[in-house]
Length: 269
Image (cartoon, helix red, strand yellow):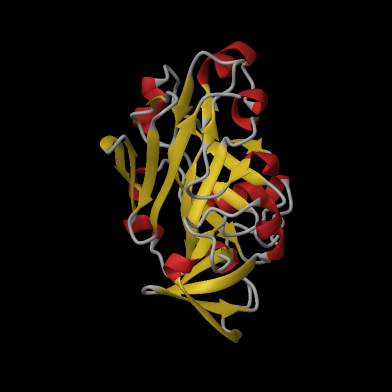
């Protein structure tokens, strides 16, 4: 099933772009995407409880599909990407955080920062947590803590990452965490493909099976460090082929079985 979070577009809005006042009147809600329809549900964690409402998919604005308390990212989880960045393959998962303030929805613009001379795309498969998760045992069923999977673009100010050594500033700018468009609950992550396109030119392509650390290992590892809460997002690392973005670009991250996350890129200011 494909879970989404959305706003119904107000009738008579013309192009579908809403004023701030109109957006305030349109309450975000959750639904299931079924073909060209969105069927209302109670929330992302009670998708079996349907409401009596439904909408045409082209009559809603898709938002980020959940509201995480944190976004935990895994670095250098593909051997070829570690090599292209001049790094060794890590012996254990390398994790860092992106702030929720960096989140934007599908189709919303990634805003370049004047503080960086190189801003890169990084297409990734992301995990959405279903229930509170802490200190999982090695024999624990990590899969039972997964609500589903989505697409994420770990936008990075590459020059600042190299300058600072640690990743917080480079990864944390506003608009540097697009994710969505939906959460797919039935995905087999081992069979998933990850692709990134810039202006319709494919830049990244890999199978999630090529990850150094599997989904189970990643969840267990992070749970030893911090408690994961329902809706928290784990981004599992980017394949090789990362590169710079420029104002005017359109970047798309596709995960087979999930869909495509599309965002334009605009200049600061």
